[in-house]
Length: 377
Image 1 (cartoon, rainbow, N blue to C red):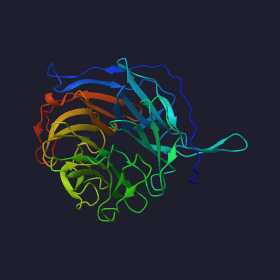
Image 2 (tube, helix red, strand yellow):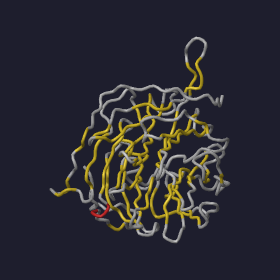
Image 3 (tube, rainbow, N blue to C red):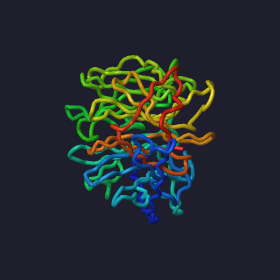
Image 4 (spheres, one colour):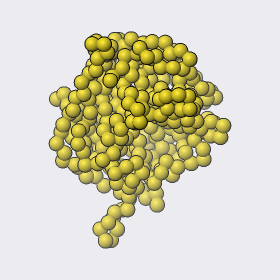
């Protein structure tokens, strides 16, 4: 069932259309810090999409996500788009879950999941993703590009029990080791970490840092601190709980116990980035299930922190009742700007550009998102 046959490629010749959403205003003023906000595409051959990732290459931005009939459907593949000449290119499918072709010409395939892009400083560009019938039984895959995402090496299955970065981008340590936040959902939701120092040829994996019984946590996102400490913020399975935090002082080999932060997590994906200034930004759903409204993924938010512990409200990117805005990704590019992608109602992927120096952050009191925070409406 877990065939090591390489996946088949196909290219979708869609017209490239960049749809720019207007930058909203609050009381007639532009939203502080928000430069632009647009869809990666308007139309595609697939009806649903989710779980985007974004990276900067020497030739510009590249984004990836999974798309198909719906999550878990066997036709779900990994799609990419390049930002060139001030617009996103047409979605291109670069990986599928095809395992083999039957004698009658039909294919046996699994859905794909959670792509993660990472650009090494001197190359290559790496694409990680998961393949399998569900998160409890999927396996890790990877492919590399030496030409900034134009072409890719044949898909390679990662070693047994190695998933690669399970949802969020890894960080490159000073010694050249790539540290990946990972997790499993087969025996409770449990966080672990994986390391590779040779571009994915060999791997080390830590034991799970918790038993997955008292606390169910997955999908760590990584922050770095001046003293060398690495902090991981994690999704919390408890729908009324908070984002969880753990830290490592030895390059990701050992970790502290998971502790709740002051930020809510309605069992939804998050992502964070440490800026060149040393401060941090976090994209997430600031919603409390069972504690009033909103209660799910109907609002997606940007928070800032100087130390990774105390967070302030910086920007509301979306807020619409009974809608879904979720699974964000965030990076800072060489020019200092911040780029965010996220799922928009499972129909499209949004790309937002933020100037972190122009954000106007507000205190979060008693866990409530301030009403006067700049918002896109």
